[in-house]
Image 1 (tube, protein in one colour):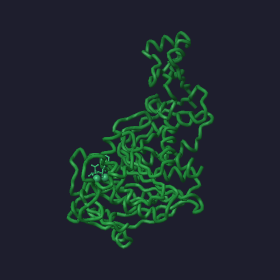
Image 2 (cartoon, helix red, strand yellow):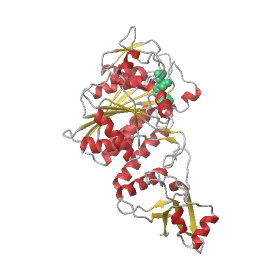
Image 3 (cartoon, protein in one colour):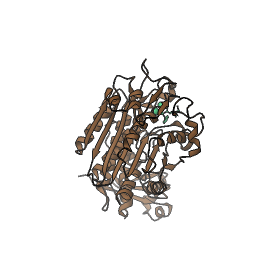
Image 4 (tube, helix red, strand yellow):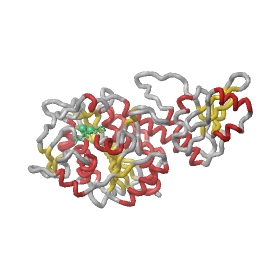
Length: 446
Ligand code: BES
Ligand code: ZN
Ligand code: ZN
């Protein structure tokens, strides 16, 4: 077994206290103990004796995320006493930083290994890494290998792994079972639309229902997107990926909840039978919807899934969706927006998000904007009559399909890292998943 190399946090003061040879070497290497920097210190044989790591302002989940990728492939340990919670965060960030998407191109270079210190919640780290890897792999896989068929297969695999029940309503059966919106949005595609319905846990436990937007590719439909708008649209099933990841986390950790996961899985494609702007369609709830824009397809499929979700009212209802570009204009790509019809739940989500380095930002369900979704000839239009506040009007559209007495969180997120950050490689990613897990663990169960 190769020796275990200590990772040593140092600030400028600590550096001065180091033995002369170490101080000199650090100075030769230009290391000043700045946060985020590190310095390999050799022994007299030229092997790595220790790694000096600039102490960051706070020790959080992302502290070791970059080192996990950049250190030579040896075994390392933390030579500092940490409380269990901090140690768990650091180890999680290390593991998350080692993710690589190797399905189509092998990144075969060896990675460094961290020997976890005592006090780390191993089960939580492993479960979070497994869940996040699932989310990332699902999103990163292009639609030619991740259409509605394969998204369903992923849900089937997960159900099998944890002995969950699963039921899938496909194609014409969607019409027979009254899911007209899911059928309409997905019908213009070879892989037919479907609703995935997964059930797990003890019916005596509090009920949590997760709904995820599963648009495997969003061309925009007949209101076709331009090249740059379409480029990343394999990620438009990011909501589905995130709720599958969250389900995996809940099931791995065996939270005492009764879990239901609903995923409308479709591709927003273009053929002669695609929905058209100005079409008026029925919805599961019975309200009629005028299609103002075929590119606002996510809210249509979610409407039917949400109305089904509240038919068996859960103690907490959560939907995740890459719903609007407007949410990204408001908050950027890295900070998910959330909307919530229940004050205490919203406050709790903010707090756990901060606590687990997985922040979300609340936007308002501003009721006066509801009338912007009115249609002259149908009950509702799927787009607002102004371009302002687009993530709010989208959330208000969804709210029409949620009963007011069901505590509901709607997450509008990017599901994609445009830039690599420590612990978060460029590409598909969960955002808010660990916060939602903590909320369910602490508020619904706790
Ligand atoms: N999937 C997109 C939203 C999206 C775009 C999320 C870019 C993240 C990044 C969604 O289906 C969509 O196209 N929404 C339209 C709505 C509009 C037509 C009212 C949008 O945001 O432009
Ligand atoms: Zn769209
Ligand atoms: Zn979309």
